Image (cartoon, rainbow, N blue to C red; front, side):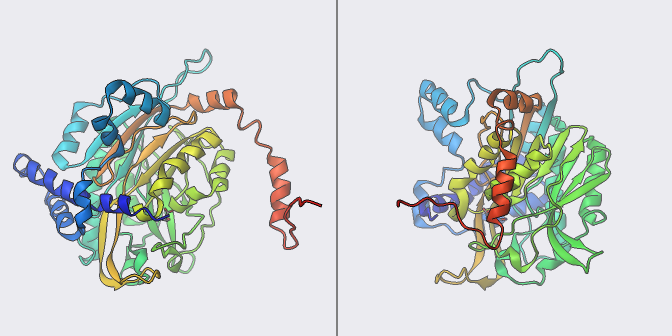
Length: 439
Ligand SMILES: NC(=O)NCCC(=O)O
């Protein structure tokens, strides 16, 4: 789907970031870590600004746009219809979390979803942190420096999540690296791959998980040392004890636009695991898997209460789909979903083509952020910004999953045996589609 206007708007975000940077420069110049300062300047210089963006570059967030332009009464009704929330569900976070965000130049937002009080079960309140971020150093910097740069930034965001009382935190897809798969070059990008259980990033995240008593889900390029050093796109789950719980490998690999990921790794072989943690039963449906309702369904069948969707996707391709897919999955499967997307435009040293007859180019993006959480009753939070680093904190009561199952009965009416029979027929070589024609 081609939506040129949205694309242009997103690329204009860098102007806004540059403006915010300059505005905050004086106030933050001593407290801002050098890597942050570099990123914000770099974005200003590397993202293309087309003349048409000037009119709309302020659209860094759809919700802020609605708030700016709609009268209060209408805004309330629009939000009820769009988000399924009857009353303001903004969650006030501890001051320290806001301060950490402000000092380090990222957005922080808090929301909550309530469930009905039950007689026999206590509320099962869980705070979820979802992190969206841009890369930090140029993609030409040494690999280890690039990774450490992103680590430093995201560690501060995890600190803010801890201050905000988060029990679970999830990063975006392939969070330690630029999303270089557009290039189809193996070197140096494969060097970002690391072991899921024993790699440096999991080690670092395990320390944070233990220190903050937090489950951490982080999505990396995995190198499987036990199976021929093969590469996978993998989400790692670390318990709040700091111990490695397991991993899930991306089930559906895109072959669309510049998402040339099939050059690097295969479809995952880990099924649909659900991780039973102190803070609920969690699963991960990595990026492109969100277009496959059956992928979402299988995590539900295995008992997931929250399914994370760490992603890397761009406006030209998928922005109109973004608000629909994870939200629909939450409704269809009676669980919470957390859709997370990176921000910024990434520039690579060599030009590549998109196979669409257009000129070769070096940039990939803009990735449009817009991280949000959807609840099983179909309500959802507003999105984080389309262009800024951000932490979304959402408090959920997991009791809502069963309450929605009881009310709507989607799990009861699911007709699994009917579909199992039909699916095995559809997958057979001699399948004949069930079509009725006029005689
Ligand atoms: N990372 C990834 O799978 N992106 C594919 C594009 C999309 O699914 O929106």
